Length: 323
Image (tube, rainbow, N blue to C red; front, side):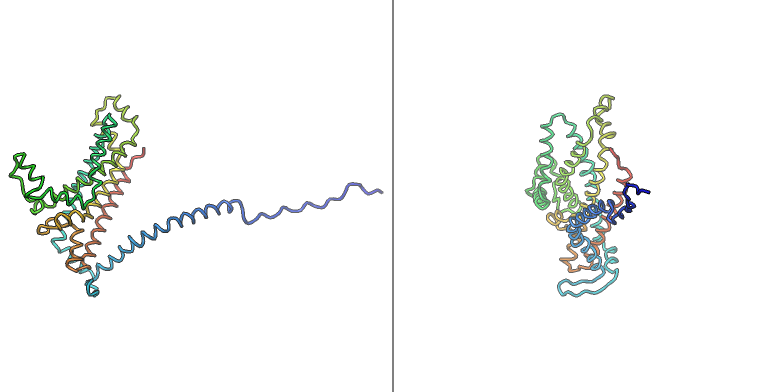
């Protein structure tokens, strides 16, 4: 019997085990690397924010429970006494009222007034005039608050100021007065200067927001016979709602952090009539050497601005328009 000439073949070897480093793990490795790289890039900004924003807030909160004499370095824990004094302090409430007036008038002029002016300018047909008017209303915003405060200090000067001179020329000499020296006009004179200085910046931001609105919407409304006023309320105003919410947050926060213009023009006088929370905080700490009380006022300012910002953010989120 002959042996078959077909060669004997060994059994096929089993497939090699799959490596633990699967394709999914290999694809996850670059993703993890990107995440760590992004974290490294963000880390310096986070550290700066913690060191210069959050840590001072925590320290200020701790100082508000102390009676602290900065010159002798003596610190005495007094609990909530500084907050009780603050709530019973008439100058604190006067300062808070002035800041509230500041915020209300700023919203009227720097938000609603700015959006109206921006809509009027963007509605002009002449590109040249639009450019000229943008430059004109933005010039005051390029001036620092300190310089603007000094400028208006001389404008309000009772003897040689431009304002009283203009009233005399117009035959309204009975209305001339010391605008910064009267308790009933000082804070409003300061607020007027601030509106002049900040109005152009807000108008520019609203102009940018209006330029993002598709022109087809205005063209369709014009074909349907919709007038300019109705186009403003039905197209422009709803579609810049997000910018309006942002500007309200910025304006209100700025109104409760006013300092430079008041210090330059009146230093809180006369008789604390133009005092605001920022100047009262400064005066309590550096003039009266009552840093614990000043820290309590600073905490109150932070809480007020935080609450107002959260409320406005919630309202803006509910009314947000996607387009």
